[in-house]
Picture 1 (cartoon, helix red, strand yellow):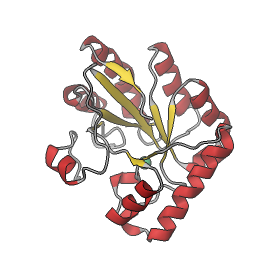
Picture 2 (picture 1 turned 180 degrees about the vertical axis):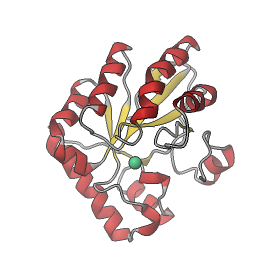
Picture 3 (picture 1 turned 90 degrees about the vertical axis):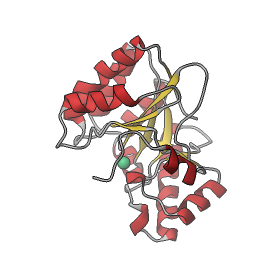
Length: 213
Ligand SMILES: [Zn+2]
């Protein structure tokens, strides 16, 4: 696996056009959830966040928004922010420029259609973190911020234990961190263990929770 749990500063410096963290003086961190809306799982995440009075950012797959618009609308009603994660969870490195841009546009339309808002999100996270420089450039030109991460929980990795997943998050989160989780079926075993405990421990460390927008 080629993932660093904590994104190293050289990667951040090379890909400086992409957002890796949000430096701030308020001890604020940013929880993000990719790949939903997913029945039951996204709703479970919403309940955990609500219990702790925390807002987060959800990078939704357009096709999942169209399949589960009621859950998508709940995200918005709860005050969370939304980001675009393409319509079909495309891997940028293996996708033609025009197809990648069209697929992102299809997700934008799904967000607009079901959010009831006149403006769609300007946040975009490339599935798998894999995006070609030209794809990134074209999306940024049309107004998107490309949101990467500072800490990846690895919740989707079935070879790690839930305890390891929790440690990944709690040990590596620092002020300004953007932290990635997944509200997906695949990640749920690790997420279910990690999310409530991580929130508790991060609160005890004095962190506040913000949304990206
Ligand atoms: Zn994803």
